[in-house]
Image (cartoon, rainbow, N blue to C red; front, top):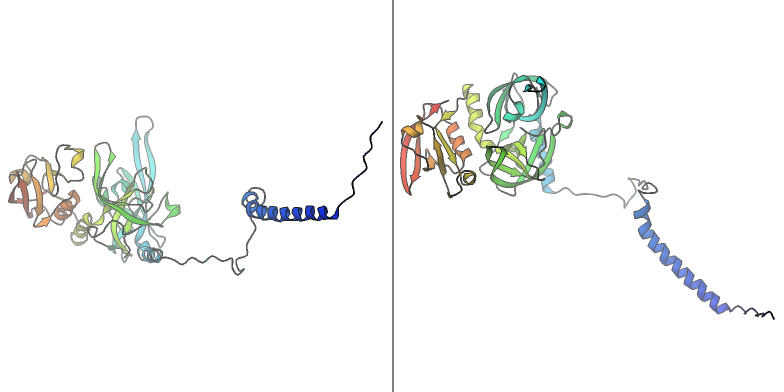
Length: 373
């Protein structure tokens, strides 16, 4: 026999409970979807909604910090003196023979009569053409007056006057943690006079750029330095040039600049005399930062260790020997190789300098006549 069950009667109380539970669940679900749905679907399924700029409460106001305003002021002050440099050079190889290649870099005007400082590797060798791009749009032919591949510095000249000129600072007065601003042409002239900002993150750094080639006493900065920035200025928060940007290593945030003080005497000679003939003492020295590359068993706390003396040089004639430690030139303390060059570059061949040095913990003083190269 078929069984038949009589349907139960509905109870109004249970229906209200179900309705209330459903309403609460819908509200909670709505809050959850409102929180997570935009983060998921906007940009994936539908575009982000447009926001009107003039709607009150939706504007974001950023108050500039002091360093940002300083960077703007520095850029305004220095940028007119920054130039673009384009070179056409001849490269020769055993497979393709001679071919022309183009390179781009940066430089900075240091005298209104057209003297420019840049890197030696920017202008290169075997040049066919050297063009300087000024901020006013002029393209001028440049001439290389002097270059030193070891220092990676070069002085150029263009036929122009009344050019905007950068103010040179004192690279010996800078300290780690100070503001550093770089201006140059990263990745070519399309991005000319790009400004980047960071800090001085290290001093007196020595790095190996090629096998057997070490650049010493560099300024380390985390201001972005990229290809094309080479030769451009590194600037302090006063708008003074404290270095010439030169290399970047593969690690992010590690760029290097040549302290400006070593180029000051070179500029001075060209501006006042029209020529620079580097004086020569005839010694190869190592400072405490770089001595470990050559003499692993020797540690010095100050001064310059004489690693080698050139035969027939002024240094040999006055009795200097290898392993002596030079402490002063003309009463000026020298603890880095760059400082030694800076002091000597203010001199001329034929000038006499006083050299104070140590040998076996004893101090001696001699006078040597500088030679020309």
